[in-house]
Length: 306
Picture 1 (cartoon, helix red, strand yellow):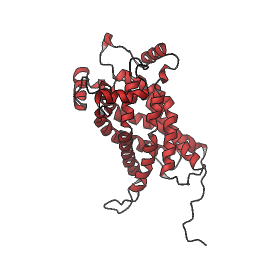
Picture 2: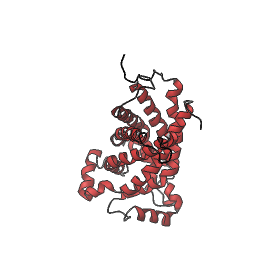
Picture 3: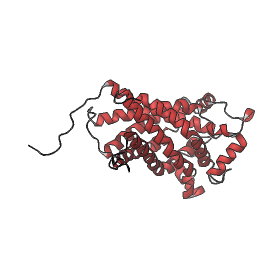
């Protein structure tokens, strides 16, 4: 008889298990909006204005926005993410759960490798891109609207959508899809590193009790660290994606040539415009969102109480 540890008995996923990730994703998306949207507005404005725009940096952008437009301006374009981020996180995290189960062969007790967690994240990123592309282009167009009152180009999300469809045809809302797919491919590193950080944190011991940290603390810390890893790696692609998607004419500079355009006009620093607010935002926003998602999933699956 072998002296090894016997594997955990198979526990096959139920329909409730498969649906829990979608429901919990709604709560995660709402959390992201509440915590992260002001940071996102500053990031988008810094990215798109570039090095020769109206702001000297993130703090100047924040101060100028509040001074000239009021604090509510930090939530410009928030109505579409309120619905959109909830929908995106429901799709992303629900599909993530199911891609994990697919790789587990339906057995919840089968432990995946870091690479397999990354593959599940990649699949989730490509899946959610179909929802994220229209949500992001509408949000960014509203965030880049500085004028108020009658001078506004767009009256709201529906007006942006009508403009895009009228100008670019039925698929105008998805003209940035290739760029979104490229950026969302980095979800491989988000969810692969989340597993790395989670397993490492569980090996540590709390100072007083000597026990491993509570699972909810692991979720929060690993989520924040994974988000920082993700944004550090994907940020240049995110800058190029956002520049491409907010061009007045999206065919003016193709996505594949936008990299060269940014480098030629601004140098390497152009790929990191707005990085500081994005990096600062990513930890609390995603740590909170992943904490809420993991906790809600356990409740919906009947594994724990609120």
